Length: 98
Image (cartoon, rainbow, N blue to C red; front, side, top):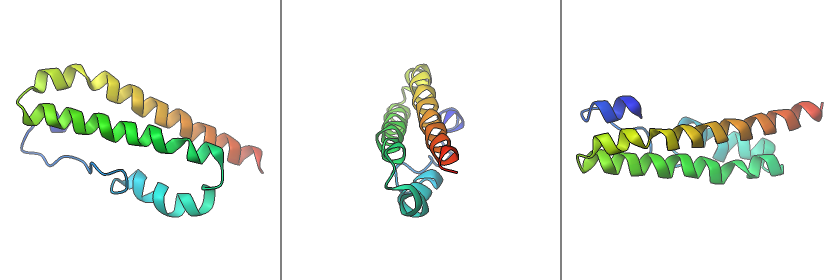
């Protein structure tokens, strides 16, 4: 996203939650394998938040408000970190199940 904000000529990353690489896994193989686990289910709103913030940042870029978008990158990083924490919780659950 940072690179995309810096260069308007670059295509943005996938904005739909089921089109990014993680979303493809989450809505496909991940759901088949882990969809019954509360730790897996808890990931969805956090993943959606990452995409929502990304869409907002790209809207700012489109409105030629790149500086404001850059100032909000911390929000995206915080959402990313929350997503990673949820993935660690899922991995911990899977490790405990062994």
